Amino acid sequence: MMEKKITAQRKKQKELPALQIPYSTIVRLTHYLRVVEKLDELGVSNISSAELSEETKINSFLVRKDLSYFGEFGTRGVGYDIPSLRRELRGILGLTKTHKAVVVGAGNLGRALIHYSGFLDKGFEITAVFDSDPGKIGSKVENFQVRSVFNLEEYLKGNPETAIGIIAVPAASAQFIANLLIANGIKGILNFAPITLQVPEEVVYSSVDLTTHLEIISFYITHPEAKKMNG
Amino acid sequence: MMEKKITAQRKKQKELPALQIPYSTIVRLTHYLRVVEKLDELGVSNISSAELSEETKINSFLVRKDLSYFGEFGTRGVGYDIPSLRRELRGILGLTKTHKAVVVGAGNLGRALIHYSGFLDKGFEITAVFDSDPGKIGSKVENFQVRSVFNLEEYLKGNPETAIGIIAVPAASAQFIANLLIANGIKGILNFAPITLQVPEEVVYSSVDLTTHLEIISFYITHPEAKKMNG
DNA sequence: CTATGTGAAGAACTTCACAGCT
DNA sequence: AGCTGTGAAGTTCTTCACATAG
Image (tube, rainbow over all chains, first blue to last red; front, side):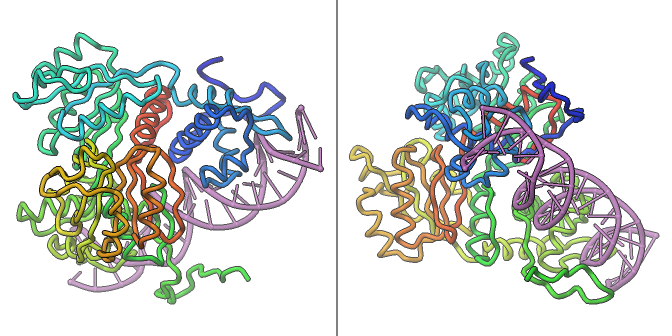
């Protein structure tokens, strides 16, 4: 019941086959969660798809469709109960267990990520920080003692539950680090180096590239007649 | 009342109507540019859509389609001339003029961005850095003397060619900063604060949210049967 | 009477096949 | 002969309309 939350045991004829969920739905789910968490904290108890639409700027039909991929979370005539929607969203996104992550690269960016991670809800936990600069190894970043990348492999072998690797190293060494992470069973990689990494199918890969973001902005500034931004 | 169906007729499609370019095309353009710049630097002079596809993992049909939105840059039977494709892509993306940008927030993230911006091709230039922390104001970050956010408005009025604002402040103050930037004629905003900013239509807006990225990874780690990642 | 959930229509985007240059 | 450029087909995603549940 937890895992394959097949919709409805009604007299639905719908088989719910492979059911490919659009990537954009997953992205939007995180926006809904953001809003719902904020409102939950404020003590608001209910929200309609129209209100959720208002907050997120995502069309209310789409809000309902997105949620309906995963179940029936609302009450007709009423809307969605915020605490329960929050719980459902966290469940869908896999945030009920804590994902352990390592950060590789203790430069400004790595430090920013580590610092920021303090604000992350349970769901993610940074467990170690690595760098190749002898001047940084051994130093403290928040509560972490920076380790040598030469110990990364050993660390991962000793801590096989580490799920996510965050790459905050220069482009030149990013693929090397990625390979190391992958070879040692990491399941997801979040890359901040401005380079496209080659990663096998089964490893979840996401990349944040400042240059790309700026170039996209440049395009839309330069061509104001072109609309639409997702990012 | 509806727009007329422009479904292709015999020989009459060079009309170029409103021609909406997919957002994803723009994102891919930046990937092509990345590859083409790398190869150009290496002295490679020509590339086919198949090779570009290989490098970027983007289907070669799509490579050609994306480029064809903007013109005919290739030579049939040969491929694309790298220096000229590079020039074309930069032109399309609006990178032939330098966009001036300010960074607001001189914490780790802001500093990482400033540091990184040194590697940016001409196309972007950070012109000033602001923070609200009296302890930071006046200090040096790379070549910039950090200014007070209280001078942001004045700065923008005095430097109206500033096109882009990069927000690297905590969530709580991000909307305030955004409003200030917008009120003073900024054209594009790149937001790193984990909050959805309300921004008018005409301002180009892009957001990088670590939480969202991690949550998306969490989803795909948790549901390995779901495929597809764009990010 | 209200707001959800969803099949179906409609758009948007991607893939394909091949015409068209070189 | 080879690789681009592009209409058309195919697929996926979004919007819509309305039956449905409270």
